[in-house]
Length: 321
Image 1 (cartoon, rainbow, N blue to C red):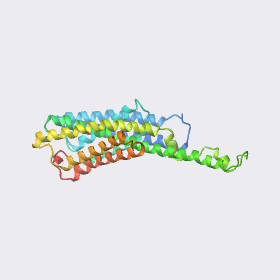
Image 2: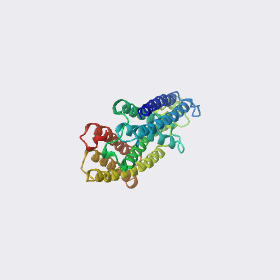
Image 3: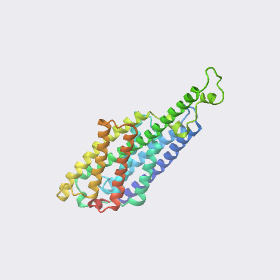
Image 4: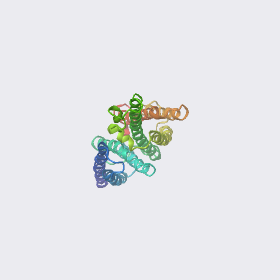
C-alpha cells in the first residue's frame, strides 16, 4: 500500500512537470502575438502545450487511481485528494471543450491555476494514504464528494472562459475605438484633399497592442459568454446536488440536516451567487461583462469556501482535512 502511495505521489509530480512544460508552451504561444504575425502562422508551441497537457492528464489519472487503491477507498476523502481530483476534472473539461471550440489560448488560464493547486496540495495538504474516519465511511462519500469535485472542476473552466471573455470584450472595444478615430479625422478633411499627414495615417490600421491582437484570435465575446453560461449551468446543477446530498449525509451522520456550520453556510452562499447569476442571465438580460463579473465572484467565493473555511474556520467538517 505504501509503495502504491509513493507511486501515486510520483505520478502527481510527473503530471506537475508535464503541466509546467505546457504552461510555458502556452505562454510562448501567447507571447508570439506580440509580433503581430500572420493569422495562419504555425503554432508549434501550442502543439507542444496540448501534447504535454494530455501526457500530464494521463499521469494525473494514474496518480488519482493509485491513490485510491493505496487507501482502499475512493480517492477524495481529504483536501489533498479533493485537490488532485478537482484539478483532474478541470483539465479534462478543458480538453473536452476543444472538441467543440478551439480555445487553446485558454490553456494558460487553466493549467497555471491547476499547477498552483497541485503545488499547494503536495506541499501543504499532503497526508499519507490511509482509511477514513467512521463519519466518512459511508456511501455518501462516493456520491456527495465526487459530485462536488466535478462541480468545482467545471466552475474552474467556466471562470477561465469568463476571464478570456473579458479580454475579448476589451479587444472588441479597442477595435471600435480604432475604427472610429480615423472616421473622425477624415470627417474634418476638405473634400477632394489629398490623403496626407493625419488622414493618410488614418488609412493605416492602428496597432491595437497585445490585448487587441489576442482578442483577434479568440471567438467573439458573446460566444465565449454563452459557453461560460452553459458550463456554469452544469456546475450549478452539480452544486445543487452537492448541497442536497450534504444535508442528507449530515442527517445520517449527525442527526440533523443543517447546523449553520461555516462550511455549510459557505456552500450555500456559493449556491446563492450562482443562482443569482443564472437568474440574472436568463430573466434580466445580464449578459456580457455583468454576467462575467457575477460568475467570477461566485468562483472567488467558492475558492474562499474551499481553502479559507476549510483551513482556518472552526468547522465540523475539519476532520476531513
